[in-house]
Image 1 (cartoon, each protein chain N blue to C red):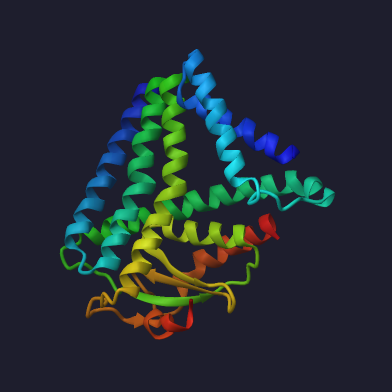
Image 2: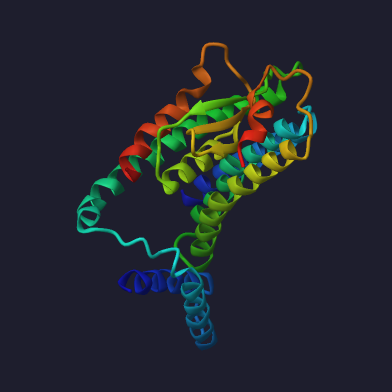
Amino acid sequence: MNETIGMVLVVTGLVFDFFGCLGLVRFPDVYNRLQASAKCITLGTCGILLGLICFKGFGATSVKAFLCLVFIILTAPVSAHALARAAYRSGVKPWSGTVEDEYSKDMDGIK
Amino acid sequence: MIKNVIMFMIWYMVWIFLSWPPEPKDIIVGAVVSLFVILMTADMMDRCDSKADIIRLPVRLAWFACYALVFIWECLKANVDVAYRVIRPDLPIRPGTIKVKVDLKSDAGLTFLANSVTLTPGTTTVDLDAGKGFLYVHMLVLKRDGRSIKAIGRFQKILKRIFE
């Protein structure tokens, strides 16, 4: 039973990681590609790690997998945010199909 | 002081769990590393809580559980939505950066909100103007009628109860 749930979670994670990579290739600019890579984290990587926890039951491996999960959730958004901000500040222009860009206007006012 | 001791126990536990099953060398190195981390971060943790905060702790934890459920639900919805947009051949995206008004004041609350927004697929926090209370959010799909910021409003309502 646990193995079945684990398998389902791992496969779901792999599928969503694959969609994330596909988005990384298909989306037009830096900012949209960041969105695709952030998507890999929540269902993709978390799914794989949760699947591993189900697979192994309570033990040394599961505890480590759980800690990895917590640290990924804590650190991944920070790096995504830093990359997006750095890209804006170093003058990377958003894609031509962008409908709204309020940050470029206000950027200099924020320290 | 009590706070530092508690933090030391937490870091020590994390270390022990990471090196499970613990051997004598892990136990010694873990104590040294935890002590070092406490010495480095003691002044950051020094904002002393009053008694009223300790009484409110269970309520905050309950709201935190509620927040986790709402967040997971929003995440699942957004994940499926973005995956669908990735595999559509015509790539139906309308990206844009908008500013969203937030009325959270505490640093912890704002950090939580910004990180949750970034973790939700399809939205990334670009910058924060804490003085004026604006969050600059890049969205993969910007809807015309302001429906795209509904999830942020929902997060904010719960975070207000946890952190303020």
